[in-house]
Length: 270
Image 1 (cartoon, rainbow, N blue to C red):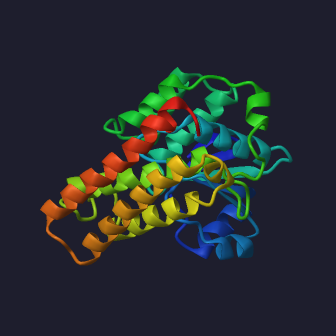
Image 2 (cartoon, rainbow, N blue to C red):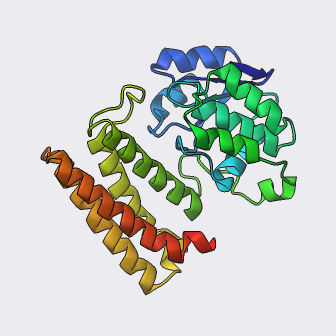
């Protein structure tokens, strides 16, 4: 879907040929807000740059909005075109594009909501609609304060972005729970076991982030509890445990996450 002459949104490229077609159209940077990792080999062969800033169906954090705004702004500076995608091309990518353009002062929230309607964003994703409705123009200096390489291979990733990714994985598990611990019909990309493994891996990696290490022993203790519960969640899914056990473990995992949020996230300490 054409948003402006140099910004197009759509669904996830499924083959090398898709990226080659985008490159032939003048696309030089692809921004993914999908949870799945992009195929960087395909991107290299197609001659396009990939920026990966995964977002959830529950909405976009301020840091995510600013990072996407910077990636979009910087990617079109020298005449290049942007292709911004999620999985389906209707929900997360539309909200991410609208929030980025509002942050850059190129769209109003009302125009953003109209864009979501045109894109076909489901009304049930209230968090996405709320993010667009509450987005505001941001001073360029605030956007410039984010790392220029955020979301790029080998680039710096803020702890707040890591935590947003973790929350996205938690949301995916909750969607799967609502589908009796299967793959939801409207989210064919969500596989419960894969999401649990992704969650555990991200929690483990987050503990090595320099900002996390600086928080000290109490933070490390809470993270150990998170990891323990995430590991147990993965094990239960792997052995196809009864739904009652899965439900109980997700409740424990959610509680251990919230125990950390009360001290750190809810005080804006990320």
